[in-house]
Image (tube, rainbow, N blue to C red; front, side, top):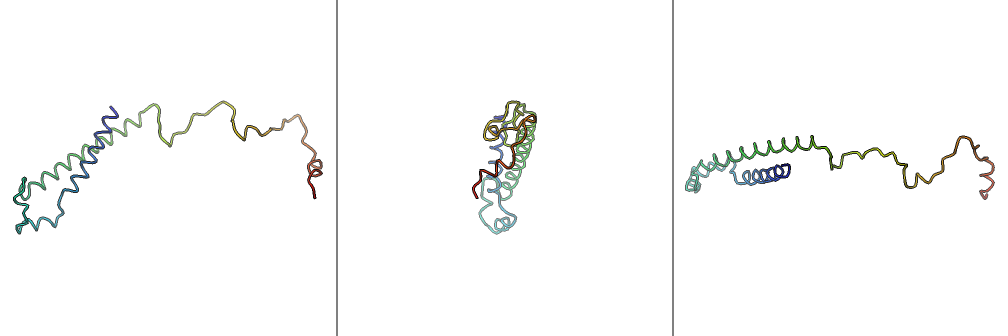
Length: 122
């Protein structure tokens, strides 16, 4: 169901892009009034503007509804594959460079500071 909703969402987005690019600006109506050739089109002088604006409104509604549906699906999903998810806390000891560092035990005395400085050449 989620995949179908995602496909409809992408198709609606591409349809909105196409319909917006096909529509004329507000200044294009003046050219049709003086014989710009738009009056002989399939939809008539104003028919195409009404059809394209209605189709854009319908696709915008479909896009909005699919956006809300996808949001609901992802919000109620049990496991998430997103980048922003935090991994579960592990009880196993850490592996890597930090695991190799010896931890001093409290019952052993600390090494003598003079013994460390004797080995350093001057």
